[in-house]
Length: 275
Image: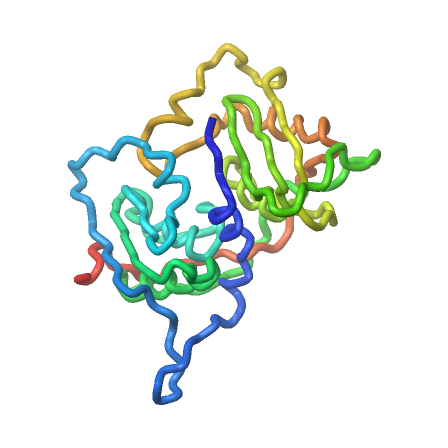
């Protein structure tokens, strides 16, 4: 069972940070300057080094109080995380998916999640000498909507979650806003899942697609417990099963085309500048 809890899920919902003016701290001279980590390190991993063993506590929850760490990660994954986008909406040189890095940063424990992401954005721009722009493209998506008989789940209890736990063929959400859910699940679908339910607040629900799977006997445990960091995946063959299971909780997904924004990397250095 894999559990994704509050901090990571809260960060996933802040996609507006990419397209809205950043909150800037003022320097003593009155010139705007971005918030920064107290200390940060990004190191390129030798291509011959094997990935570390998957560590659920550190690799699924990169923020731990006053530290933010990522192990055996790619620049594409770091950018997707920093700008709250699925990996598929970050486009750049091929090495951004093959070169791996270790990152560690320190900040005051009380730093808000949104500010941590601004600090990460600034760090990546500086260390990788990034230049990028944003493009809007007509894109195939799955539009998540409420079924004709309404949702079949309850409002979450205030003060709990949000959190998601994954089994081999199931998913359970606690106090989960639909916006968080769709952004998170998009990572395992061939098209982005977009929230058009109109539902506000958090909800408790469970999806079980075990009897929809094309190969019920397949053992998918390796995808949950091993493999290179940041490559944890639901098996793609289960995608149709997952989408069909929405009906059990009074939801439905419809294929559409809508305009989405993409982050296009124009320039990035493969080796980050000195820490």
